[in-house]
Amino acid sequence: MPFLVPSESIDSESLILVLAFGDASLLEARCVFGGGAKVLARCDDIAVADLNGVRFNRCAQLAGVHKVALPLPPVGSPEFGEAITFPEKNFNFSVSLYCVQGDREAEYDELSEELLLRLRELGLRKANLIRSRSGPELHSEKVVSRSAMDFVVFPMEATNQWGVTVYVPETEAFKERSKERPYITSGISLSSRLARLLVNLSGAIRGQVLLDPFCGSGTILGEALLKGVDCVGVDRNHGSVERAKENLSWLLSHGRRGEAPPSFTVVAGDATNLRRSLGDRKVDAVVSEPILVPKLSSPPSLEKARRLVRHASAIYSEALYEMSGALKPGGRMVLVVPSIRTADGKEVVMSFDDLHEARLRPFQPAGAPRCEYPLQVSHQSTRWVRRAVYVLERV
Ligand SMILES: C[S@@+](CC[C@H](N)C(=O)[O-])C[C@H]1O[C@@H](n2cnc3c(N)ncnc32)[C@H](O)[C@@H]1O
Image 1 (cartoon, rainbow, N blue to C red):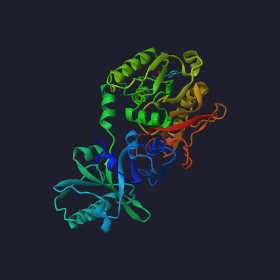
Image 2 (cartoon, rainbow, N blue to C red):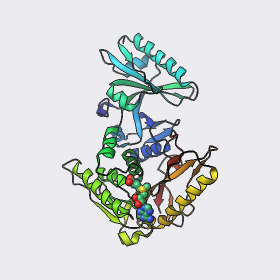
Image 3 (tube, rainbow, N blue to C red):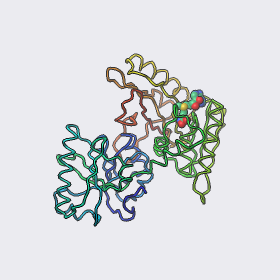
Image 4 (cartoon, rainbow, N blue to C red):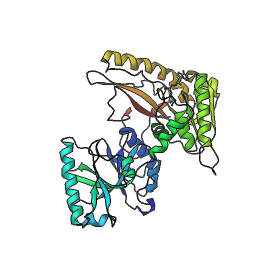
């Protein structure tokens, strides 16, 4: 039950998004809400969106949010008590604090005390504060499992902006798909949730065709299929092709009934010679993670990081023209690239020099501030090898 209140009853024009994958989540929200809505980044984990008439239930398409909250008036103001309908009996509540640079624990204690006192003032004597053991935030799964009224709070323009969580995505479904499909290749596959975000970035919709030319066991293709998008997968490894086919058949057999199922084709082939596999066929979107840098047991030197990224770049460059050639003009190409944090704290990330010659340009969503690529997938990863994303557009 991802909507904590019925979505029809929400008429707020402003939303607070708690981002799961940093900048990549922000771009996903811009793609899903479209040009009418305005999404403003406020700090690492939080974005505020003005929907401008876009329907609230589009939030259900977002894979990259932990929570969606509605803004509230200041806790001390008379309007605060009128802005929410509180349960009449005992109820659980939580405070989830974001974007604080200083002493998060002290700030959390102060804000939860302020809220608790205010709830008491409003006559809510049996409101029970649930504290998270893992920091000043109640994770979205816990918000649902504990039926908590979750108050989010973050600093904004010299004050604190409060909000109440109204939607959390059904992440369990993503986890189940990752765990239960016939072939799990956890070492090389990205999570279903991230794959869905990438598909959303591509803008592919029901009835269109998406290509993953390095498809592995088909995680990206699977998320596209579940959105009703027809899929084409290519992999040079015959075993991967068979595994992807089995996974995709399994997904479709578990899909919703009553809708015409999308179709898929997976073939053995070389992404650096796609014409041989696809002929003159053109697709609406390309989404792929062509290479994973091996896991490192310690942060590498700058020299080693550059060497690893150079090696990866060669594979992308070889396939770039072919992928672009298979894409319809205006179609998007979403590529995951490695980003390596070095021992001296530098970030070494892949870049493309030859976009123009490949008839590609960085995708910029309409009516939004310019996107600087690559987008880091998350700000909070502690690993040294991370993911970053380019979204390119076929000219
Ligand atoms: C990082 S894995 C992709 C994993 C995939 N996203 C998944 O979820 O399973 C990269 C895949 O690209 C394939 N591959 C590598 N070079 C290739 C090439 N030149 N053409 C086609 N496939 C290639 C590998 O066999 C491997 O399955």
